[in-house]
Length: 355
Image (tube, rainbow, N blue to C red):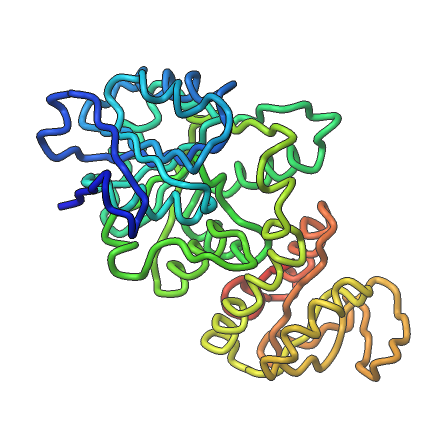
């Protein structure tokens, strides 16, 4: 059982549990919400959680050393488990929340997003109905300006297309297939495969890739159950751990592991995309021992690297090669996919998309 001591100088962590009989019994769902300087939004986020129709739920709020009025606001909030510690970052806050959770299912939530009233109930029911799935997300609404924040809005549209487990699994090397605060997962996953890791990478994406590498399956409720806001101070906009390069370095190791296991022609493969950015990222894969036999490009350009470049109509038969499309430009994957399918390639067997 989790416990904490206000006088424990080793952890410098103390708990503020408002008197509430619901904490005397085991909850089915624990909602973990890290908070840092969120005095302007945290109460609305909590209100959206308290409005949930699902009752067997505890709300764990981890104040990560806020320097504004967040902690004072939280001290007066009923029916939450409040943990407070010095500012150590989101990974420590998340893992402290997991340690305090007693639910069979863990739901994530951020202090600047909003849950729809049926979110927790529908995701818990989904995990109940599909015991072979370990992670469940949902479609999310984009809470921002689509014109000013077009890139983020396009990402939301993309993740909302990934609903079925196969689609999520096959596209996980393109980008993170989930909005982090929209997920719910079984507590046994972090107990068995480890919790969040701290490092120069996006902690949520690394977690999904690591768990899915072990065979964990993920799906989504095909409904919009969370409003994913996009404030200017969101970590994914301000922290280097969420840069494009950090995302690629994170996925490269897990992509190599997948190729090693699933590419029948390993370590050889053909890469679709011969641009400078793609070749820069391919160089990381080559450090793992991957050998690029050819590049595919719509223009038959000559590369200084000495690797042949072929046109799409020159792609060998799928029985003789494995193709890794790595074109990151949005919309181009939708053009590549039908070409490969028409030539007999099968995603997950003779090709896999990355970016």
